[in-house]
Amino acid sequence: SPSPSPSPSPSPPPTTTMTTTEVIGGDEEALPLVEEGKGKVDVETIKMEMEEAMETEEERMEVEEGTAQVEEQIQVENEIETEEMKVDVEAKEEEEAKEEEEAAEEEEEEEEEIIREKEAGIKAKEEEDEKEEEEKEKEEEGEKEEEEEE
Image (cartoon, rainbow, N blue to C red; front, side, top):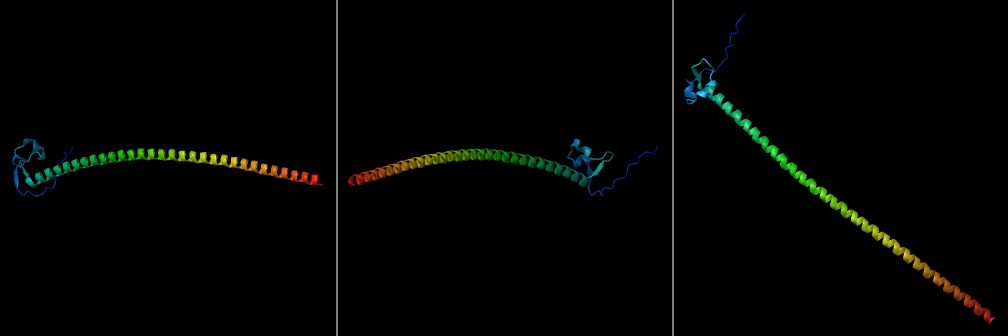
């Protein structure tokens, strides 16, 4: 079976080389940044990789922070909306109650007006009947007087 040959990866030409321990300030845990088998590493490459890792971490933190801010803003807006809706509902209920009360008062006034008109109509009719009665009596008296004169 053919053994897989490692494909050579093109790397930028080293500018300044230092030992891994020098680049990472004596921190042996940072060694995984360096490919095994190499004693010297391109300083620029390690710096770039570390900067990229830091930028990625910063971006991730910024995104998390931004997400948290957006979530908090949404929560605040939702609370405000809920409060506004409560106020709107209360105002609407108050308005409806007021309208119902006004409608009831109007209806009551209309009924009272109808009763007054009926009473006035009855009174007018009674007065008219009395006048007619008086006129009849006068006519009858006048006829009697005429008969008596004859």
